[in-house]
Image (cartoon, rainbow, N blue to C red; front, top):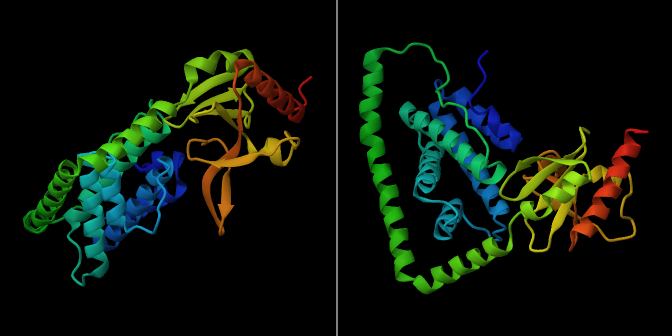
Length: 317
């Protein structure tokens, strides 16, 4: 059986991958059900972006409000906005209408959730991510006349929805122009965050390597290092204002490291080689424990203590 184009999504979210695979499984026989699953995919992805950007909600926001907020804060650009709105609007229609959803709409949603998954992986998971080639899943041959009818209906029915999205996007652009002071403040706040929060890889990479922690990967939120070739020997250098590392939960919860200080757990999809925390019966984001330091010397001490624990676990002589 051919591998799905969506399997790369499982590298950073099993829930998102499951929704994408449902869309694919329902695409040809139940396009309306496929569209409702695509909407759930978009909602989950938006929530993941909010978490990555540390965008708190003073009060619960509707999905359309969240998408608009991401656009106003320049977290997403026009193309991503259009894809999120396309699957949101058509997903709502599929959830409430009696008439079966046009299959061409579901096919376009299939492509949209693929593009959104690729965008998320490139922005939040790894700058070196290489996307698979897009393709629709195989299907049984269809009558050409039926296919032509579907295409004609698709063009007529979806053009209005696309125009509506374009008009809504135009209104948002005008709002940004008409309220420059508010938007400029948001941009300045975002710029301050961007300037003060970044992964200080160049500053500390040599210290990691001297302690036998090899550089493996870099995402927007963290740089990944692995001690020797130990399966669980990962440490992450985070993007905090104060230099910070995240260590494997095993070191705190089983090995009882750093009992003399108060430790704090840290959840992030960037900690992809750490276990996921169970909440309300479901596995949520990956998590570890974070520690701050000021100098390379302090980092070196931390890394040596961590290395000793890993060596002890595997009984290295």
